[in-house]
Image (cartoon, rainbow, N blue to C red; front, side, top):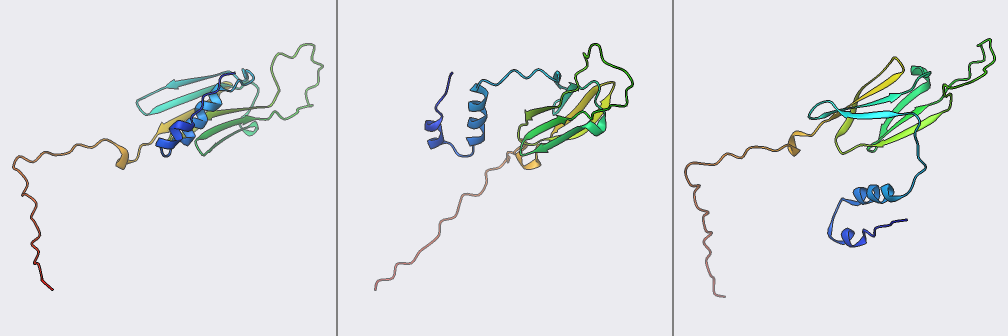
Amino acid sequence: MRHVDFSPLYRSTVGFDRLFTMLDSLAQPEQAQTYPPYNIERTGENTYRITMAVAGFDETELSIEAHANVLSVKGEKNEDTAEGGEFLYRGIAKRAFERRFQLADHVEVSAASLKNGLLHIDLLRNIPETMKPRKIAIAAEPVDAPKAIEAQVING
């Protein structure tokens, strides 16, 4: 097991503790979670889409929650005993799942849809205007030099 000690970086950085925690958790071996399969794609400069294959689930059995930069998708299959037959082979999974995605700052869910067994979650990186790069105008004439404050010395 590989563990990196980030404590020297904590002494000289402020506000990066969440990043160090994420990096440390990535080094931890997790059980390989392969269900349900998913894709993450970049659809534009500031837009992304997560597509999950959730065959057999409908809208009422899925829940999507975004909280504190974590997107959580849960699926709980309702037991439907109304089917009149006996399964000889069950290849369509009916198991519950929970999949979590770490979101970057200012990334929010803009829409979600379920079509043909695929759950599409559209994400948008919405950077505030104050954080966007801005153009600084350069004056053609020099700006007036700063004025000195005159002081009087009083002998006392």
